[in-house]
Length: 221
Image 1 (cartoon, helix red, strand yellow):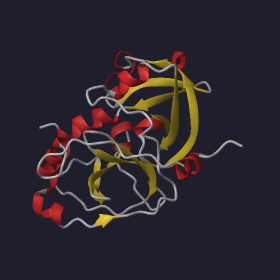
Image 2 (cartoon, helix red, strand yellow):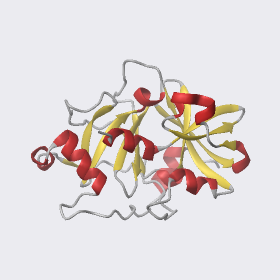
Image 3 (cartoon, helix red, strand yellow):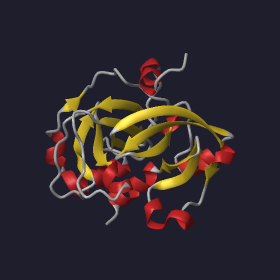
Image 4 (cartoon, helix red, strand yellow):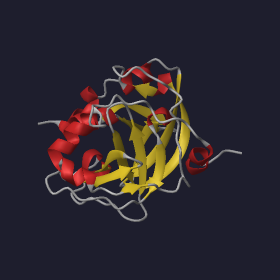
C-alpha cells in the first residue's frame, strides 16, 4: 500500500544533522539572523516549542559535507525521492533528504524589522527557526497566507533551520535524473531565484526549491 507523505514522515526517526556551533550555541547563520532581526534579549525570551510529532520526523539519511550544495548532491543521484507541495495552487518539490519534519500551524513571534516574506520566528526544540511565506518567494501574490490549516516543512541544515509555510502536502515521487532540468535561470529568469532545478512530474513542470538560496536572501545586507 502506498503511504501518504504524512504517514511516511510519522514512521521515520532520523537524527538531526550535526551543526557547527559558535561559543554562544548558535551556528554562524543563526547568529547572523538573531543579530539582524531579533537581538539576544528577545532570543532568551522565546518559548521553546515541543510540537507533537504526528506528521513527522523526516529523513536525514544522506550525510553531506557542509560545502556541498543541495543542487550538487542531487545532480549526483540517479533517482531522487521528492515530496510535492502546493503554494497558492502551484506545485513545487523538495527532496526528502532536505526535510527534517512536517508540522501543522505554530504561532510565531513577529519580527517588525524582518522582510515581508518572514512570518516570524519560533524556538523549535532549542533551534532558532524562521517561518517563511513561500507564497512571497515563489508566487506573484501580494498578500501572504498563514493559517491554522497551513503545513510547515522544516528544513534543517548545517547553516540553520527554516520553517517553509505551504498550503498542502501533495504526494511523494521518485524522480529520475533525466526528468530533472538544471540551470533553470536561463529559462525562468527572476522566478528561478529560489529554485535549483525543475522536474517533469506526470507531464507537469514543478520547481525544486533551493533552501540555501532562501537563507542567502534572508541574511543579505
